[in-house]
Structure formats: C-alpha cells, structure tokens
Figure 1 (cartoon, helix red, strand yellow):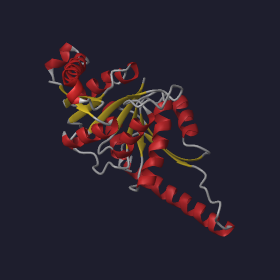
Figure 2 (cartoon, helix red, strand yellow):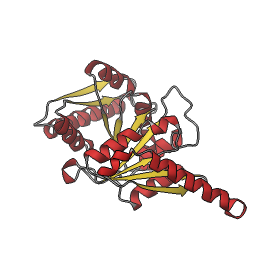
Figure 3 (cartoon, helix red, strand yellow):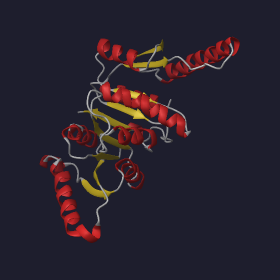
Length: 274
C-alpha cells in the first residue's frame, strides 16, 4: 500500500482519476484438502477486501474507483482497464520481503511494464520509504544502454527532473574491461559514453539543472541499484523492450536486468516501453 500515496499525489497534481485495482488470481493448492483449500481461498479474499477498504480510505479527497477483480492472470484485467479508461500511467504496488516473493512479484511487474503502452511506476518490494517532500522527487536516476528502446525513456526522466526541480543523474554500465590489455580502449569507451550521456539532455535544460553523468563497470542491474543507493536516488527511470521483442539480452533492457531492478530497487522505478 506504499503505492497509494504516490497515486494520490500524482492524481492531485494532474487532476486525474485513480482506478485502484487488486487482482485475485488462482492459488495453487494441489496438496490441500477441500476444506483447507476453501479456507485458504476465503482468507485471501477477506484479506484482499480489507486491503481495498484501506486503499479506499487513503484515496478520500481524489476522484477514484476501487475494484477487486478475479482473473486467471493479472495482465488481463489491467489490459482491459487501460483500454476502457484511457489510463495515462500505471502505478504498480507490490509487497513481500523474501527472495521468492520478490522474484514472483518482479515477474508480474515485468509482464505489465513490457505489455502496457503507457509508463509504469512500480513501488517494488524493496522500497521501504514512503512518499516524502509532498510527493516531490529530489534525485532522478536515468540508466541507459543507448539502444533505441532505452532512449525512449530519456524525455520522461528529463521531464520528471524538470517538474520536480530534481537532480538529474545519468548512468551507463559497461562490461568489466581487461585493463592490462585494453586500458586505453576502456578509457576511450568511458569518454565516449560520458559524451553520449550528456548529449541526451537538451541544451535548454541547463537553464534549470546540471545533469551529472557517470559510467560504471559490471553487472547492469547490480550497478544501477548500487548507484541508486549511493546517490540516494528517489526515482529510477528505465527504457524497456516490449513483450513482443527478445527479452533475454544481457542489457539494461534484458529480462534479468529490468526484473532485478524492479524487485530490488530501494526506490520507485518508472519504466517506459520503447
């Protein structure tokens, strides 16, 4: 329910309606007795209803609708409401602290942000801090691998930083080089990457911010999360491929990278489908 205050703040800022949905999907109960299975399902439904009542109370003061939906998958009702209500932003709230739960929730989030045709703001299971500063972001971190899909998110990162008068942090992660054999090549690559990062920001943006660029080496997901922690970012922005594309590439846009960032990021993650 950490996502609700973000939804309220955004709805107030843009005078929008919030559609709050909780999807109840089938629970695997292969080894349960009929009695225990019925009790488990009833408990889940009661918990969901209580949760939606709390959400409804938090949304008082902004136009909203709450929905408790039963479906075979989370994406199906999400797709329907995106189409019917002309949604401009999906805010996805998750919960759970264990590794298995994080992976599961990361998978659900990934299906949504790769299929949705609008930006998706995910408040992942590792986000421990709620909304602060009246809903203002103070440090926006944009991570990119310079592909077309990744670059599609750059205008959103710049716009968010401008609207919130936030520091704009730009990050590119490269593979670990063999410094002994290719030190000069690595230095040239870093310089080129730094130039590309600064080129992402329009010149007029210098009127309101000074973007800060950094290049790091190693695993993209790990470095993105580490950088977010070190620089105290309160929003990460990523470009992602659509579900129709190849999801396994080991880049910022690959399945494992986006999945891990959403599941383990210490702050909300805004994903934009390229």
